[in-house]
Length: 113
Image (cartoon, rainbow, N blue to C red):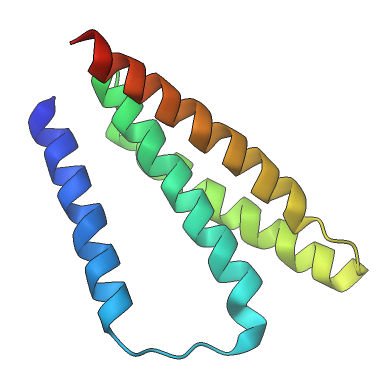
């Protein structure tokens, strides 16, 4: 279990390091989609870490959740942009709440050990 968490954390920090040091400039129109994709990915990662700590991690569930979260968030942002309604806020709130819940559960698991 700890090896999986260590690998996930190492991958997260490596991705952040590479992403912050490569000078890629995305068009401004992609900013809402990228922000939601990052939130969805972080939600899936913290959910995977939580599942790993609870000994019920499943690769299929993790990968399907990762990509379905990203597609749903991008779809909400796209539809909201077309309708002129900020539907992306619904995804931001939902992913934000889940992210903080997963982080709180992970923290409790770490404090119990």
